[in-house]
Image: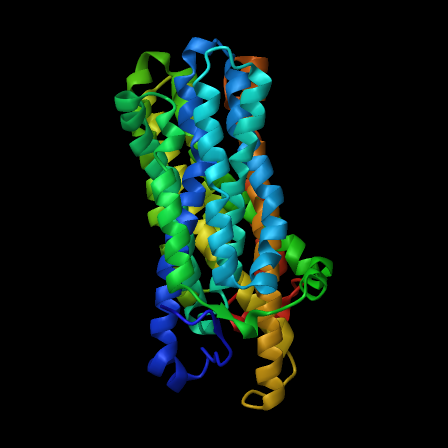
Length: 440
């Protein structure tokens, strides 16, 4: 069993990392991924449950509200979840956050067990699934402390991908479970796994004393311009990933009712977006996160336009392939924007300080602490994109009968994000020109 608290942690020291750091970091990463994965499954389970509620005769817009509310609540919870590992310990809070997933799991089973459950009760219970959305922020804020600077992109990419793939898991497994055991099983199925994740975190994860920080110190990053710039970019990447992934089943059913039997293929979108996320981090480690992010936003705008074409032509093959491309680009963007965050805050912290000095080492530690806090805030703001996308689709369909207006708005936003990336992080006279050498 791991020691609950580790006081000596120096991942940027090559000897320490090779001697003991790497093994400990990997162990914490594995169990962090497991717990975070379950968080995503409970967070997004309503994307499948909503498709299965035909007997309740809810409108498409009402169903999109059920899918959107967990995104809204989960986004808001990411802010307190960000600060929890530094306050209570990464191991300790992972145990608590895993056990909290029992709430949406049990309540879901209660809601669908009564054919007379009113719509407003469904909304309230769907909102509790947002507890799973908060797990991402605490997990990422915790894991960033375990890895050295030059492995941040890959480590955070793997941690995030392991969580993100929970969207695909739920969309693949739940139709089979519901078909075999009924709709209540969509909640009850996860209970043994939740308990296993809590026990795994308790016995095999660690708390780092070097990660201790007061919420007041961490909240200082909310006053940094870079926190808000990156929040906007993360709305475009992660917000798009979670929004498109959770909207996919309902979008297929509502826009291609004759292809409703193919809703089971929706899991392929979040699966691809999750698996490709580490590639975004890997490319950014080598080419620079800003460069990868800039090109990727342009690709996202093009992919959204292709999805629009597929819908306007009522061509399912074009729609499906373009949608897969769109979700894949969100995955790459997730990895690249997350790689930018620690690079930005480290570069700002050590600017003007001679490398190899104690002052430089102390400044780098502050930069890592600030990056951890910023990651949580950015992930919280960015996740609101999932709510906006689902509400965009729902409102567009209710008003026009189709999703074209929503997709046009999304494509325009991606072009704005590309301009922001170029203006702030790529051009010589950008708002942070000194960070060019940091491979932002």
